Length: 451
Image 1 (cartoon, rainbow, N blue to C red):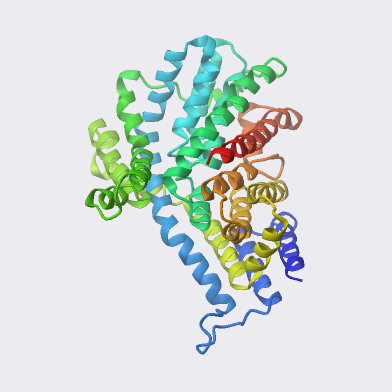
Image 2: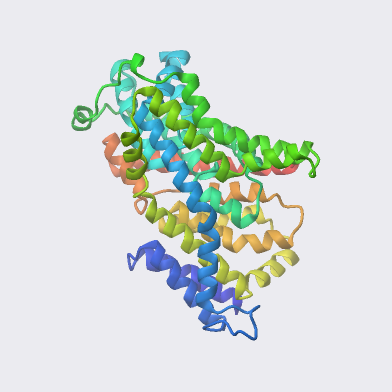
């Protein structure tokens, strides 16, 4: 009966989002309430039995626990990305890599640009930020916009789905109780070869079959790149963007190398906590990409205020995913599924990837699919020692990217900016997203043999 409730809950969630066109936040909360009622959870918590929370208390706890950490990380990460965009730092990284790789290998440069810039900005922000550069390069070189753009989008998409501190990946880290530093390290090991296959390799093949010039209407709206002399230095920008990643990785090394009682261990763990690492990097960016570039306090304040508004819907969806996860656990469903999976010896990695993939295809939302899959698989993983929590984060992230089609906003963004038909978008965008999901799974399973 509990399995039937889980299945019905997932179907109901998909129908609410795709057919009823409800906001994913509202759909997740409704589904969480439905699961609580169907499993017989008390409506309110009985003071005499605090170990059996009521439906609403469970939802509040799940949402609060998820956002208590993630809201800080998301807010700071958004500010860091905004400083990089407004200072011209992203453009400096792109131009430097393109010059180093040369015109013949410009599609490789674009993949690395997307991968590096994508670490500190949302996918949509990175896409809009870098697409003028892709247009400029395509016009200057005469190379098909497909061959230039696909690697750029592949780099951005891989980082969006796999690498913390991106919101869904960071939320999954919390749900699976994974180590942030290890997750980042593994995500780079898995993400780079995945981005290479879906980016430069696939772009070289599909670029010969679909040639696209820069759409004239968009090209006219896109401003030409700034004078390189006006941009921050490459080292300055790279160091600022990667500073939080470096601090988190150092904390993970301290976990392995240093005595847990030592001051050095405690200090490095404090500095490498995602909240502190992003706080340090964000404040540093105010100086390295702000004041040093001639910005005043009012301008930096305006940038940091303006960039927070678009994060509201992302935070609400992730918080609702945490609420749904908590209801699954408090209702006893999580424990029951974990017991079944333990007896069947099912691989949590394959299960997490599969559930995320199914929800992604049905809803078009990578965030919803990753959060839902993590909530279902986390209790299974906890009951099956030996499964790497970090690889589970990557597996659900990889599954959440597969087969993006007409129900995904990213599909239409790619189509319009590249001036493609629906068929051409399926052959490029949908194909590259599917390559990312499947290639990443293969690399995750290989890495699982060693870790």
